[in-house]
Image (cartoon, rainbow, N blue to C red; front, side, top):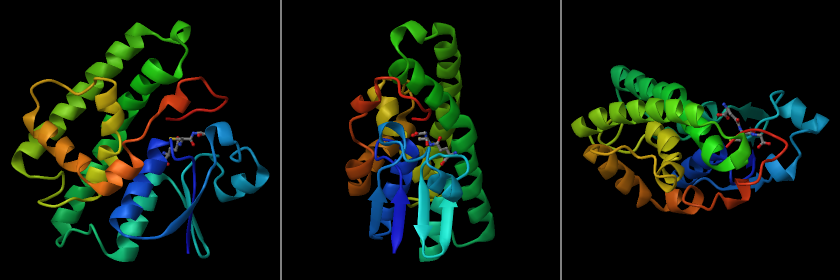
Length: 215
Ligand SMILES: N[C@@H](CCC(=O)N[C@@H](CS)C(=O)NCC(=O)O)C(=O)O
């Protein structure tokens, strides 16, 4: 029995919900974080000392960090596992690139465009993040010009991890121009029922600043 702690408006929770959907795994989700609180409780800190969501419980296992959760679910179900060691290493490479080069500037921009009150926004910070995000997305475009998905011919974990950001990137008009392979990939991901159910959702509840951080 899988239990996922985390508000459905969190992109890191959305990655996991989309993966669970692709894997056809039933899961009970418990709201936590943001306006739901819970993360401030002592009981939550025992599960995750960083007080962040998502947290996955599977029997005796308690796991946090969204990408560790994605890897766990993939290994548990033996799905999204490329067949050769080099292909697995390259899937890890794209997962790491998404986490270190795409998600950080995206989060900065999400705060600058949505979560911070207009008076607290900084145009210089937003411009620098926009440059970094565009550069990273252009790297993805180059890879996607060679193959349909980031780590091979079919959907894999890096597509889910990075693809979970695309709804907000597009909604905030942050997709770079002249990236046809990126656009084709984004369109393919947006056809997936799990993406539609868990990622393509409103983020209006996040517009007002909250007591905590995250996107
Ligand atoms: N690296 C962590 C980041 C987790 C994170 O920052 N989560 C945000 C939501 S996206 C959070 O818990 N924010 C505090 C809150 O929602 O109260 C992961 O990938 O799971």
